[in-house]
Length: 231
Ligand SMILES: [Zn+2]
Image 1 (tube, protein in one colour):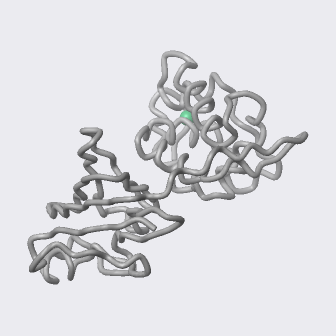
Image 2 (spheres, rainbow, N blue to C red):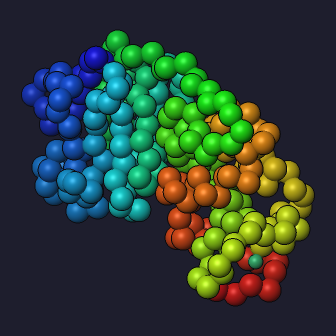
Protein backbone atom coordinates (compact mmCIF):
# COMPACT_ATOMS: atom_id res chain seq x y z
CA UNK A 1 0.00 0.00 0.00
CA UNK A 2 1.50 3.31 -1.06
CA UNK A 3 1.49 6.40 1.12
CA UNK A 4 0.36 9.79 -0.15
CA UNK A 5 0.99 13.11 1.52
CA UNK A 6 -0.78 16.16 0.12
CA UNK A 7 0.49 19.65 0.78
CA UNK A 8 -1.64 22.61 -0.28
CA UNK A 9 -1.72 26.18 0.94
CA UNK A 10 -5.35 25.90 2.02
CA UNK A 11 -4.56 22.96 4.33
CA UNK A 12 -3.37 23.81 7.84
CA UNK A 13 -0.60 21.24 7.43
CA UNK A 14 0.40 18.47 4.98
CA UNK A 15 -2.10 15.64 5.16
CA UNK A 16 -1.62 11.88 4.87
CA UNK A 17 -4.45 10.54 2.73
CA UNK A 18 -5.75 7.11 3.79
CA UNK A 19 -5.67 4.58 0.98
CA UNK A 20 -9.44 4.10 1.12
CA UNK A 21 -10.06 7.81 0.59
CA UNK A 22 -10.52 9.45 -2.77
CA UNK A 23 -9.39 13.07 -2.72
CA UNK A 24 -11.10 15.33 -5.25
CA UNK A 25 -9.06 18.22 -6.57
CA UNK A 26 -12.25 20.13 -7.16
CA UNK A 27 -13.45 23.71 -6.95
CA UNK A 28 -14.12 23.53 -3.23
CA UNK A 29 -10.78 21.97 -2.33
CA UNK A 30 -8.64 24.12 -4.62
CA UNK A 31 -10.35 27.48 -4.47
CA UNK A 32 -12.74 27.39 -1.55
CA UNK A 33 -15.56 27.26 -4.11
CA UNK A 34 -14.58 30.52 -5.85
CA UNK A 35 -12.88 29.52 -9.15
CA UNK A 36 -15.66 28.48 -11.50
CA UNK A 37 -13.24 27.20 -14.17
CA UNK A 38 -12.51 24.28 -11.85
CA UNK A 39 -15.07 21.45 -11.99
CA UNK A 40 -16.90 20.13 -9.01
CA UNK A 41 -16.73 16.48 -7.96
CA UNK A 42 -17.48 13.98 -9.47
CA UNK A 43 -16.28 15.68 -12.69
CA UNK A 44 -13.14 17.11 -11.14
CA UNK A 45 -9.75 15.36 -11.17
CA UNK A 46 -9.09 13.17 -8.14
CA UNK A 47 -6.41 11.12 -6.40
CA UNK A 48 -7.10 7.47 -5.77
CA UNK A 49 -5.23 4.40 -4.50
CA UNK A 50 -5.45 1.36 -6.79
CA UNK A 51 -3.34 -1.79 -6.87
CA UNK A 52 -0.70 -0.46 -4.49
CA UNK A 53 -0.17 2.86 -6.23
CA UNK A 54 -1.63 6.36 -6.13
CA UNK A 55 -3.15 7.65 -9.36
CA UNK A 56 -4.16 11.08 -10.56
CA UNK A 57 -7.32 10.67 -12.59
CA UNK A 58 -8.76 13.36 -14.78
CA UNK A 59 -12.53 13.50 -15.24
CA UNK A 60 -14.72 13.80 -18.28
CA UNK A 61 -14.53 17.57 -18.48
CA UNK A 62 -12.59 18.51 -21.63
CA UNK A 63 -11.90 22.01 -20.35
CA UNK A 64 -10.05 20.93 -17.22
CA UNK A 65 -6.32 21.50 -17.56
CA UNK A 66 -4.39 18.94 -15.53
CA UNK A 67 -0.67 18.32 -15.55
CA UNK A 68 1.82 16.68 -13.21
CA UNK A 69 5.37 17.84 -12.73
CA UNK A 70 7.45 14.86 -11.56
CA UNK A 71 10.45 16.19 -9.66
CA UNK A 72 12.67 13.10 -10.04
CA UNK A 73 12.30 13.14 -13.82
CA UNK A 74 12.14 16.96 -14.20
CA UNK A 75 9.25 16.33 -16.53
CA UNK A 76 5.76 17.66 -16.90
CA UNK A 77 3.04 15.26 -18.05
CA UNK A 78 -0.32 16.41 -19.31
CA UNK A 79 -3.17 14.27 -18.05
CA UNK A 80 -5.90 14.35 -20.67
CA UNK A 81 -9.62 14.00 -20.31
CA UNK A 82 -10.46 10.54 -18.83
CA UNK A 83 -6.75 9.75 -18.38
CA UNK A 84 -5.15 8.20 -15.32
CA UNK A 85 -1.57 8.95 -14.35
CA UNK A 86 0.34 6.64 -11.96
CA UNK A 87 2.19 8.86 -9.50
CA UNK A 88 5.76 7.72 -9.01
CA UNK A 89 7.44 7.59 -5.61
CA UNK A 90 8.91 10.90 -4.57
CA UNK A 91 7.74 14.45 -5.06
CA UNK A 92 5.33 15.63 -7.70
CA UNK A 93 3.33 18.76 -8.21
CA UNK A 94 -0.16 18.64 -9.69
CA UNK A 95 -1.23 21.67 -11.70
CA UNK A 96 -4.97 22.20 -12.07
CA UNK A 97 -5.60 25.51 -13.81
CA UNK A 98 -3.57 27.95 -11.65
CA UNK A 99 -3.59 25.80 -8.52
CA UNK A 100 -0.48 23.87 -7.48
CA UNK A 101 -0.74 20.88 -5.15
CA UNK A 102 2.42 19.27 -3.85
CA UNK A 103 2.42 15.49 -3.42
CA UNK A 104 4.82 13.04 -1.89
CA UNK A 105 4.33 9.33 -2.62
CA UNK A 106 6.18 6.52 -0.87
CA UNK A 107 6.34 2.74 -1.09
CA UNK A 108 4.37 2.24 -4.27
CA UNK A 109 3.95 -1.33 -5.44
CA UNK A 110 6.29 -2.47 -8.18
CA UNK A 111 4.72 -2.75 -11.60
CA UNK A 112 3.79 -6.34 -12.28
CA UNK A 113 6.02 -7.98 -14.88
CA UNK A 114 4.54 -8.08 -18.34
CA UNK A 115 1.96 -10.79 -18.59
CA UNK A 116 2.37 -12.18 -22.07
CA UNK A 117 -0.56 -14.05 -23.51
CA UNK A 118 0.46 -16.64 -26.03
CA UNK A 119 -1.73 -18.41 -28.54
CA UNK A 120 -2.95 -17.75 -32.04
CA UNK A 121 -4.76 -14.48 -31.55
CA UNK A 122 -6.00 -12.36 -28.73
CA UNK A 123 -7.12 -8.81 -28.37
CA UNK A 124 -6.80 -8.87 -24.59
CA UNK A 125 -3.49 -7.04 -24.57
CA UNK A 126 -0.93 -6.92 -21.79
CA UNK A 127 -1.75 -5.99 -18.24
CA UNK A 128 -2.32 -2.23 -17.89
CA UNK A 129 -2.20 -1.67 -21.64
CA UNK A 130 -5.17 0.67 -21.85
CA UNK A 131 -3.69 2.98 -19.24
CA UNK A 132 -0.33 3.00 -21.03
CA UNK A 133 -2.01 3.85 -24.32
CA UNK A 134 -3.90 6.70 -22.62
CA UNK A 135 -0.60 8.04 -21.30
CA UNK A 136 1.06 7.69 -24.69
CA UNK A 137 -1.76 9.47 -26.47
CA UNK A 138 -1.87 12.28 -23.95
CA UNK A 139 1.89 12.73 -24.33
CA UNK A 140 1.75 12.48 -28.12
CA UNK A 141 -1.53 14.04 -29.22
CA UNK A 142 -0.55 13.78 -32.88
CA UNK A 143 -0.71 9.98 -32.59
CA UNK A 144 -4.35 10.36 -31.60
CA UNK A 145 -5.07 12.62 -34.58
CA UNK A 146 -3.29 10.27 -37.04
CA UNK A 147 -5.21 7.26 -35.71
CA UNK A 148 -8.47 9.22 -35.87
CA UNK A 149 -7.78 9.92 -39.55
CA UNK A 150 -6.67 6.35 -40.33
CA UNK A 151 -9.72 4.80 -38.63
CA UNK A 152 -12.24 7.38 -39.86
CA UNK A 153 -14.54 4.76 -41.39
CA UNK A 154 -15.05 3.19 -37.96
CA UNK A 155 -16.71 6.42 -36.86
CA UNK A 156 -18.60 7.11 -40.07
CA UNK A 157 -22.29 6.30 -39.68
CA UNK A 158 -23.67 3.87 -42.23
CA UNK A 159 -20.49 1.87 -42.97
CA UNK A 160 -21.14 -1.81 -42.19
CA UNK A 161 -17.61 -3.14 -42.62
CA UNK A 162 -15.26 -0.30 -41.84
CA UNK A 163 -11.64 -0.57 -42.94
CA UNK A 164 -8.62 1.60 -42.24
CA UNK A 165 -8.23 4.35 -44.80
CA UNK A 166 -5.72 4.05 -47.57
CA UNK A 167 -2.32 5.13 -46.19
CA UNK A 168 -1.97 7.86 -48.82
CA UNK A 169 -5.42 9.18 -48.02
CA UNK A 170 -4.47 9.27 -44.34
CA UNK A 171 -1.42 11.36 -45.25
CA UNK A 172 -3.54 13.80 -47.25
CA UNK A 173 -6.14 14.16 -44.50
CA UNK A 174 -3.39 14.84 -41.95
CA UNK A 175 -1.27 16.99 -44.28
CA UNK A 176 1.77 14.76 -43.67
CA UNK A 177 4.83 14.68 -45.94
CA UNK A 178 5.55 10.98 -45.33
CA UNK A 179 4.15 7.78 -43.84
CA UNK A 180 6.46 8.04 -40.84
CA UNK A 181 3.95 9.59 -38.44
CA UNK A 182 1.35 6.94 -39.24
CA UNK A 183 3.82 4.06 -38.92
CA UNK A 184 5.17 5.45 -35.68
CA UNK A 185 1.71 5.93 -34.16
CA UNK A 186 0.66 2.38 -35.13
CA UNK A 187 3.92 0.79 -33.94
CA UNK A 188 4.02 2.62 -30.62
CA UNK A 189 0.38 1.99 -29.76
CA UNK A 190 0.54 -1.70 -30.78
CA UNK A 191 3.71 -2.09 -28.70
CA UNK A 192 2.05 -0.61 -25.61
CA UNK A 193 -0.84 -3.05 -25.97
CA UNK A 194 0.80 -6.28 -27.14
CA UNK A 195 4.46 -5.74 -26.25
CA UNK A 196 5.83 -5.76 -29.80
CA UNK A 197 5.07 -3.77 -32.94
CA UNK A 198 4.31 -6.78 -35.18
CA UNK A 199 1.33 -8.97 -35.62
CA UNK A 200 -1.67 -7.24 -34.07
CA UNK A 201 -2.48 -4.30 -36.31
CA UNK A 202 -5.72 -5.81 -37.56
CA UNK A 203 -6.96 -6.00 -33.96
CA UNK A 204 -6.02 -2.43 -33.14
CA UNK A 205 -9.16 -0.51 -34.17
CA UNK A 206 -11.43 -2.87 -32.20
CA UNK A 207 -9.20 -2.60 -29.16
CA UNK A 208 -9.01 1.20 -29.27
CA UNK A 209 -12.75 1.55 -29.73
CA UNK A 210 -13.67 -1.03 -27.09
CA UNK A 211 -11.41 0.61 -24.52
CA UNK A 212 -12.66 4.06 -25.54
CA UNK A 213 -9.11 5.11 -26.33
CA UNK A 214 -10.30 6.50 -29.64
CA UNK A 215 -13.76 8.06 -29.77
CA UNK A 216 -15.96 9.70 -32.40
CA UNK A 217 -15.13 13.11 -31.01
CA UNK A 218 -11.45 12.61 -31.95
CA UNK A 219 -12.46 13.03 -35.60
CA UNK A 220 -12.36 16.75 -34.88
CA UNK A 221 -8.58 16.51 -34.49
CA UNK A 222 -8.08 15.67 -38.19
CA UNK A 223 -7.31 18.89 -40.08
CA UNK A 224 -8.44 17.82 -43.62
CA UNK A 225 -6.62 20.81 -45.10
CA UNK A 226 -5.15 19.11 -48.17
CA UNK A 227 -7.98 16.80 -49.16
CA UNK A 228 -11.51 17.19 -50.40
CA UNK A 229 -13.19 16.24 -47.15
CA UNK A 230 -15.38 18.85 -45.59
CA UNK A 231 -17.08 18.24 -42.31
ZN1 LIG B 1 -9.52 14.38 -45.43
